[in-house]
Image (cartoon, rainbow, N blue to C red; front, side, top):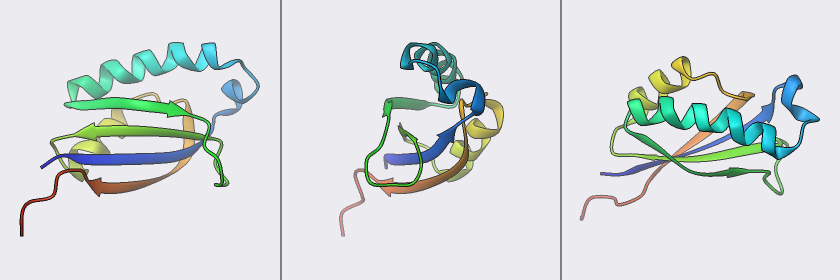
Length: 93
């Protein structure tokens, strides 16, 4: 089964006033760590309609524990994260 992880957070102070090009460089490093955990960064950017100022969508065949371990290892450019986990291709009923 595939899982999606939609992570909403606030950019850390050192990135909040910088152009997105700076965040792009940091996210390239995040993508490398994610790959080690069999997680793919699908997209990231500025969300609309939520209180957080940054969102990242991840996808993986592995579950929540793997995502948690990735988030502990990665030097994420955002903090105060809330994450929604969704089943992308749920099993047939």
